[in-house]
Image 1: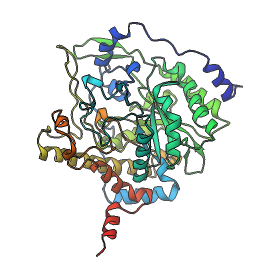
Image 2: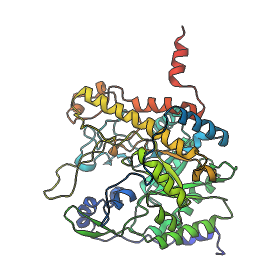
Image 3: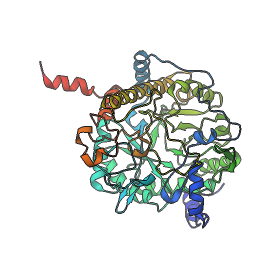
Length: 475
């Protein structure tokens, strides 16, 4: 194309992002009900997978094409870990926490979603150990970095809402803090404009230039592949969308941020052309299970965000990815426990989210039921870890053949959806004023964190925390 990255970036940044309609307030209710994003609130809407299930004629089936996988929890994990440790020297940097820098306290933002009134009433089913915090607080960033390092995880994937956004403003300080703990930073490009392909190349070049090249690559995640090559790995959300969705009344609606596959392909090709002299490999990942469209759009693979896609279906999806020559990354997760909207108007298509992993309804006011729900969450962590390691390490997998290993953990601190590993308050530490909001905090608020730490220890080359505690206790 005869254009350097810096030349392209200089011209692209001069162009203003396309303006959204002035009647945003009038459109907000409809967009939310249909799962559409609301960038003014940094509210991402539904993923590509969820949107596909709303498309005209779509079924609700999430099982993989080749049926379920039931791996041996012990032998498969041990075999997979041995294989991965032999091929990759820096496994902690291949484990990437989904990370959110969108919380504010003056005034409150995100903590006040869905009719909540912080600081006692926050937009989560769980009260954080730190309480409702400001993501730009240095003390908060330092604590987060210490916790992530304690787990042995070496990277975070920042939810990013465009140049100049609050999430963008947080990045320089966040990278400084994370770099001090040997934690690398990459990005999850969010749907902050309906015209995704109009800014996609510009955004990637901005991130690489501003937070990679200008900083001497001190904290930007460059994955080292099995052949020793290095390159960035960038995800995008709401990428492979249907042109239309159907609501519960049967009405068909146009998807404003739909992008045709050919348009995506033009932009992903441009990224690679511009960066070919800088990196031998650039991983561009989409949140989709439509392997044909993902391939046609020019993405290297899929990185599924949704915790409602069960691990038992991942083998089939991995086989479909392999058939299309795509990489796959399925996330380690504790399930899903999203907040319920308040004051839903009559006739709305809104349905409260269900608790994942699926099972009997949870009576959250009952202590025993809450602990049983947390045990289901622990089981999901184990199942998702075993399954994703097995699938990526399998010699016939696309990932193993390409020498790629990358696992996202969903999430460090997405409190709205209830799948955070960041420590919560112990149930006994909730104040009387907090208890009246019915938080789901378990007896031990860091139970997910500690369980994950124990399960990851062999992969990241650390002694088991339980074994260490026993050794310290002595005979």
